[in-house]
Length: 213
Image 1 (cartoon, rainbow, N blue to C red):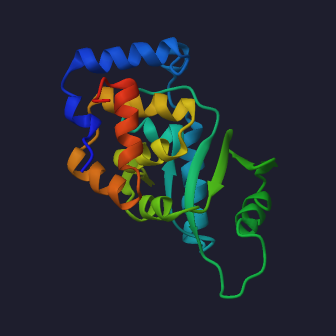
Image 2 (image 1 turned 45 degrees about the horizontal axis):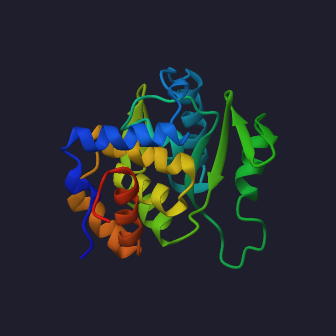
């Protein structure tokens, strides 16, 4: 089996070196940190919970940058990614997200390109696009935001999704997960193995964490 970059995680020199390299390459920008969660988040989640209660959607979970803030330092972000299981009758021919748009727009929320703006927050609803995202949604954990029930994708699934997408900002987030020590190797490694990401994970370790070449 390929070695895991998390084996080097206790070495702060290795991790900080990776962070410095990422900063040098423009992957991390300190100005993106330190923002407080907007009060509209609670109201936005209440709207989504109402939509779930009304049968428009099934399970949902917060992902992306906002999902990552449940495990990391708060960071500035412009939108919320909501991974969502849709309730659709067999043979339905409409666009998958049409019921969500119709529900929210009819209640006064605005549509802007791929986003729906709810309580000041642009929200992008994302049906799972592959087996990894389906698993991430299924295994999302329950939490609360100011007393409002919600679900968030686990840190390990967020890390795997970032690794698979592989953009500069995804690698930066992955480095933050490692540096914060929030990833459980016993949970992460089987996820990476199931979804064919072990080799990519090792390559990430070589580049940013001083792993073996």
